[in-house]
Length: 475
Image 1 (tube, rainbow, N blue to C red):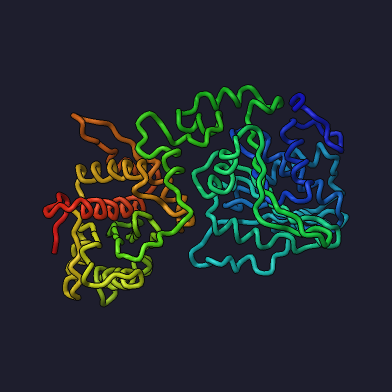
Image 2: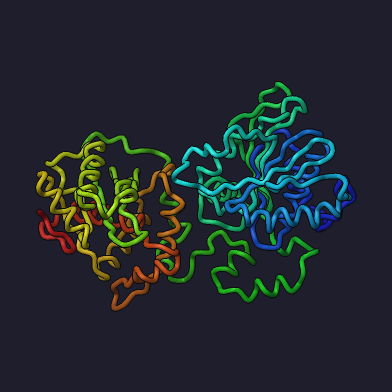
């Protein structure tokens, strides 16, 4: 690609990658585009240019621009649009008005709407978006979102004047490297196809002007070094960042979480993903339960079926439990665990394949299960047992004896928790980072990772045939 500067149709000086982003956006069958990499690559300006060009060229369209947090969206992307993009594209004060909700209304009837995309458990189906109808959607910092947010807003695109103008619905996103679903949706296919500046691949079908077309996703990998207009002081600031953030924001490295002593490297987690559910008929299932009784920590059930992690469930009763309730929390979690186990083919006869970490509430859960005839396995959590359990989980993921199904609900969170684990070898024994340091690194307890590790430890040690397995007590 020639040079780093090019002229857009409006005479705006842009980077070559921004020009490529515009060309992809105007391509009939490219429906989802991620433009991202390091900081300073001109992502927010590009969103403003694309949304404004759409509004100018097609009177009456309705373009959405969203971000997880509405206040951040208005402070960043909309400020760039109003303060910079309007000026360079010749939009004067008489050419638009801004409503109280922040939406921008142009004199030709086109509108740009700010949309908050945070996920609320109280509104899992995004009913607050109601009958929102958009021509196209732009998401800034899509890596901040949860997957349901992305899919919910995607369903609102292509519902406003697309047929009139023959416009393929577009979802254009930007982000820095992220360990969320964005990595699975965009970076991993891009990487498998060979990487480079751009990759494009089919992801279903779309319709334009009455014609059914193959639909494509595309990833344009941008860098601060591709932006000749960036302030040098900004680059110097990125160079002084701590190593992890420097890799992410300066180098645009999607494996930024890896360091020399990472226990679960991104390449390892990528390799562990499977797209097939187990088909075996014999019973080879294990449940690991990380029971929590502290603040915002969660109780999580993990199910491994024939070596594949297929389900992780956060306790719903714990989320809604009131300390004034007549029933103790341990009783409610025990009931929920039995229901989860039975739904997945467990009976009292194979309850030993359920391992429960017994802390304060966990002891109560164990006892409640025992009174119901469910004689489960007790997992004893110590720093030594956690180190051994996580190190063995890494070995099992590496040799393929354990895998993770690709559509696991909450996969992005599990990857984030696992990737935060580091280790060192002391006298040929693994010493994994302590749990309190993990909490400081990710902002909460690694409950999903712990539950997975407990389930795998149970699976691994029962398959070893040992009668007296360390870290376990058989009831």
